Length: 189
View 1 (cartoon, rainbow, N blue to C red):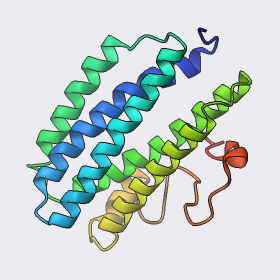
View 2: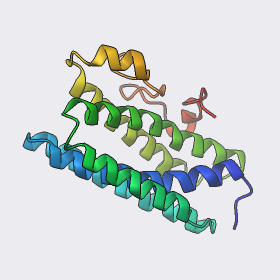
View 3: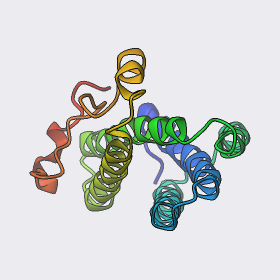
View 4: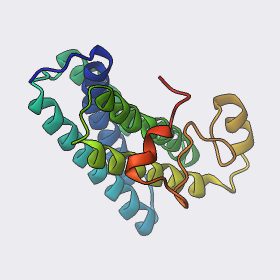
């Protein structure tokens, strides 16, 4: 059953390919850190991204949405470049930009849920909710990792994300239940 919602279709196709870029980036990020505990956490985040990609593909296949070959090539190259750059730009920037990226990705899944609900489709609410919360957990990990860096105030001011600022309004300590989570990310369309 094809979906008659161009914004949703576009967002699903984008998320599918962007998850590959993120996973590739985390391969390089994990390889660039020395601390075994940090390496393990980043490796788990990479695995989470591959899992999100598989979940998004399953949804796309259910509605006969083709994968964007353009997005696949574009995000493959972006992910590989970011992966390589992690070995050259020091420790702070990979953590900072990973956190900022994850912060924005949180909303992708809640917006998808809202778009599906506009079509009166609720069967994907649980998986989209879980992926959104998982992205928030990733964001929090990266926020905590850079919280004491002297570079953070400057980057937070320039790029609009950091320990004091997020790109989403999800509260992990008091998450809304799935049925009420459509209130999240109302500031993003």
